[in-house]
Image (cartoon, one colour):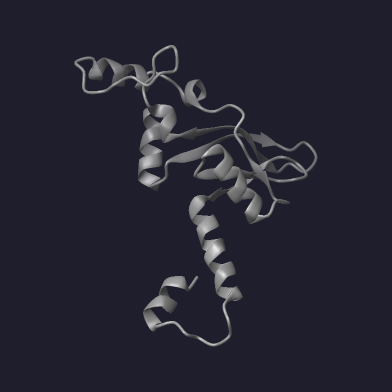
Amino acid sequence: VDEAIATLLTAGVSGAPVIEHLKNAENGKTENRLVGFVSSFDFLPREETGTLVSLGDLEDSETARRILGQTVKDIMTRVPVTVTTNDMMKTAAEVMAKHRLHALPVVDAKRGNLVGIVTAKDVMRDVMRTAKHCLPAENNFSQDMADIVAP
């Protein structure tokens, strides 16, 4: 778990897909099978009931040791919510809103392999790009506003 935490912190992200590399017997290519998703929320210490442990107590070092003693497999979401390569960005936005997620693994619609990840930032960029194309032809905005909505 400590390596996973360090990787997320270094990458500046709050979560990542957990994959298993499999060799395709037909074509010999390596495929990335999605086996889970781990987010910063998964690293928060919990009681056996699932209730979050309050930090700031004397047992903090023991709690940290317990967390670091786990594996990603122990804490990851095993059946993550996903979208496919056939889905529209609107679908991804709806799924994120429904499940209160900031990122979704994207799987190939035909084979089910992980092909990428879509984030809330990607959705916001798409909304801005779409809005920009819907604006009237004449530019009534100041330069500063135009810079804000540029892709």
